[in-house]
Amino acid sequence: MICDRLKAVLQKIHAAEATYHRAEGSVQLLAVSKTKPVEDIREAWACGQRAFGENYAQELEDKYEALDDLDIEWHYIGPLQSNKTRIIANYADWMHSIDREKIARRLSEQRPEHLPPLNICLQINISGEVSKSGIAIDEIRSLAEVIAPLPGLRLRGLMTLPAPVQDFDEQRAAFARVRQAFDALNESGLGLDTLSMGMSNDLEAAIAEGATMVRIGTAIFGQRARPHTD
Ligand SMILES: *Cc1c(COP(=O)(O)O)cnc(C)c1O
Image 1 (cartoon, rainbow, N blue to C red):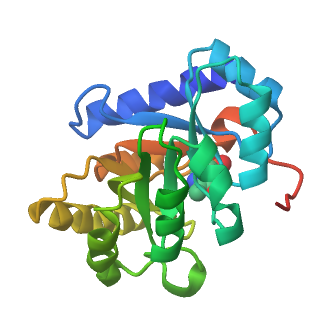
Image 2: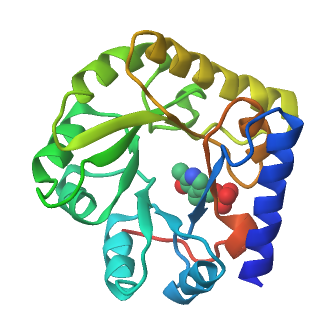
């Protein structure tokens, strides 16, 4: 079941790559497994999926330990309180939701020396007050310049989580603004290679606008039933 859905999502990604003249294989799939049991992750792993995304620090640590026998690339995509940074510094390969210098500095300091630098995306808020997470588009450059030199981190790109809308052109317009910000940062030599955008309902619009990583939960694992507190 999970395997079939995973394959269908990969097909959708490949079709969108072709439709929007993106290079084949240029869009990576991040399977968002938040609130789902470790058995579901094992099933997706057996089907070939390696990158998984989690939203709650304690849940990421628990799953990391329960799945220690698998070669999984762990991505943290949720809001992070400063008293939970050590968990992410120790167990994550990627952190997509940086919107504050303080959290970035703690992650850099706490990143263990035996691990490669933690891959970082800055979260952009393009929907105004709808979401509390993320920084405004005109504040990205100053945050990027502070974070890029931190030794325990490697700044890879931008992430966004737009307010849900159904209209395809509206979805594209939001993603286009993030891509423009991404291009502008690269013009000044930051060397970013990751645009983390697109979810189950808007992955085609995101791919049309240059996403290199789509974060898909529901379309692979089904609806999330239980509410979650960290
Ligand atoms: C839950 C979540 C997703 C996945 O959303 P779906 O609609 O289930 O595909 C992607 N990104 C973030 C940041 C999320 O919190």
